[in-house]
Length: 176
Image (tube, rainbow, N blue to C red; front, side, top):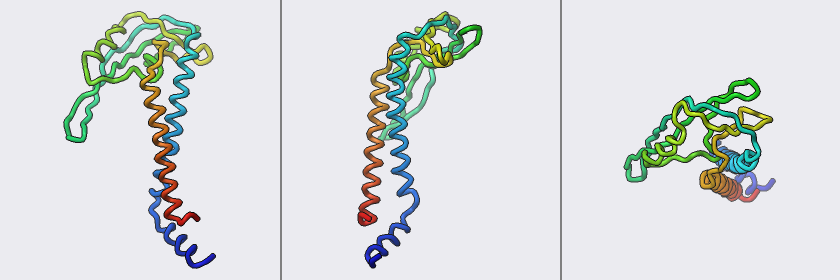
């Protein structure tokens, strides 16, 4: 090993651990997000042939979360939160999925309430369930295309950022 390689190795050993951990975390997070997006697409396609059970809506609420933008302006996001119970072969199940990819949140309480109002508390609803895994269920056989697309795009962005991080590490190590 020559002098330059020794100096490069010594400099690399002084790098904080997060220099390596961050790109690895972004890579794993990116692949998980892309896998989830593809899984939701597959499940949404599969649920077209799933049997139905009659379910009862046991919870109907609007979940509120607070956010702020760069100018510190605060705003609220509203998401319908629906829970339902159903029976398959005498076994009781409880579900909360409205559709694959998420039902979507809104900054408009009225829009979120309109989505929740489709499932009044105590009402009967058709529940589409996977016959091989009856706990896997949904109320709506459509997919949130925007939600799934955003999940996949964020996954790709995370993978690209992680590759950039690994490239920076390679440059800092002098290509060794």
